[in-house]
Length: 210
Image 1 (cartoon, helix red, strand yellow):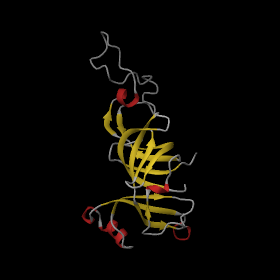
Image 2 (cartoon, helix red, strand yellow):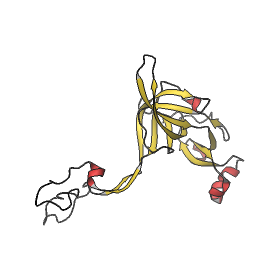
Image 3 (cartoon, helix red, strand yellow):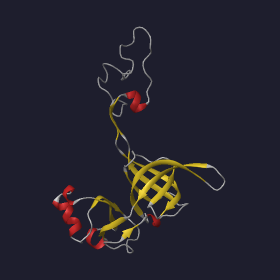
């Protein structure tokens, strides 16, 4: 990883390219982020840069969190994320990282938290079919079907598709295209859909598989 930034998902729209094709994009308010801490191999065993994003009042933080910023006299930030970069020598505590670190045409990986759906049944969670809508079946037609043999092994195997918590998990989408950069408004337009609801926090980094 060579660079990264924290952003907030604003929503989706479309942009027209040079030949008039409509390109679906997700617009993200990326940065400006502040370098809050720099990890070194000598002290911490690895190289990394911790970035802070979005201002917040001190009363919303614990004393330990507030002291983390006060240690270096930095403005308090709501979100922190550590990026393990190949070369951290160009980053110093207090520096600002803007969306201009990326450019149109680049490939990026975006990590976000998907929308939460709560406790969901097998049809919504796993796209399973409902039971037959005939006599002798029911009265519930959206319940899970056969779970396997009865007397042997007398249990449900692990990893069987069952009802349960659906969504609200971290997902990374690889090799997305940066379509446009608006440095004046700290906006980046990335082709395609990105996990999470509007207002969700996402992490953007240069693609590791491009």
